Amino acid sequence: MGVRARGIVKSLRVGFGQRAVWFHWDYYNETLPLEQRDLIDRVAAEIEDPRQGARLAKDIDIRFDTENDQTFSQEDKALNTAIVGRFGAMLGAMNVVLVTFVLGEATVLGLAGGGLGVALAYPLVQGLLSKYLEQEMQVAPQRVATADALGSLLLGVLLGLIAAGLPALRAGRLQVTESLSHVN
Image 1 (cartoon, rainbow, N blue to C red):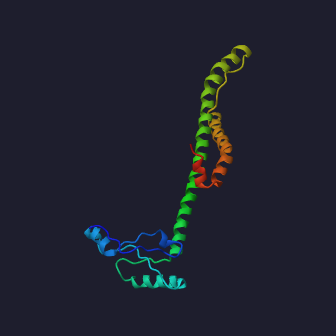
Image 2: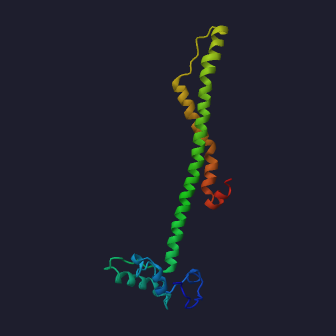
Image 3: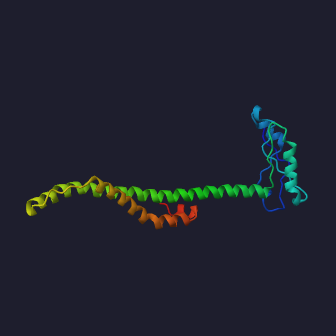
């Protein structure tokens, strides 16, 4: 059975009523699976005195406190504020993710640079340079100490993080939507 229109509602208030779609309960209820019929999850009500909204919401919640399914009533402004707050928290978390990506990339690049330097140091210092110095200048064989190799890796990571500090700071200050518009 299709949904039949009983009327068209035009809200005189700017806000909730202009963004809502209204269904006739009986017609809508018939379209639901049996286990979901006769249940509601949201009720919208228009009140005469907006100053009474918080009190009426509390009265509704008190009425359903003893039921299996309690209610949580809010004025539309409070609901919108909560939704905006949650969205703001998600955007804040995304800013942390953007900064973490910038610093993570810097760490990986610094580690790769330090690793490449260490990888080249062994054959050059212990191989070519050491043999040249031994033969031409009678200098003892040169070796790359493990502590120096590890220090070079750490220094590479540190330099990468320092180099990424300013971009990470800028990324953290940008709005998430603005940051994402710069991603290719």
